[in-house]
Length: 73
Image 1 (spheres, rainbow, N blue to C red):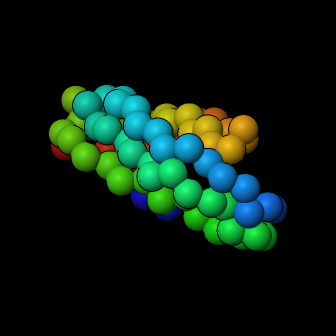
Image 2: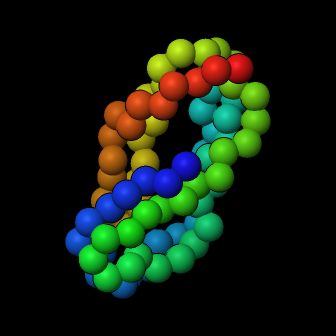
């Protein structure tokens, strides 16, 4: 899953992993691009439920709350 961002400054972000609804979201540590780019999460697992799922993402001190994913087990 790629999450776009704007205004990147070349700073670093740490690795993270969290599990929600039976799915594990993993982000490898890296650097923001200068300007625009994407944070790329890998998602593994089997969802516990289907339908709309709200996910909160935080990286480099910034957050994207309420990101909606459609899940189909």
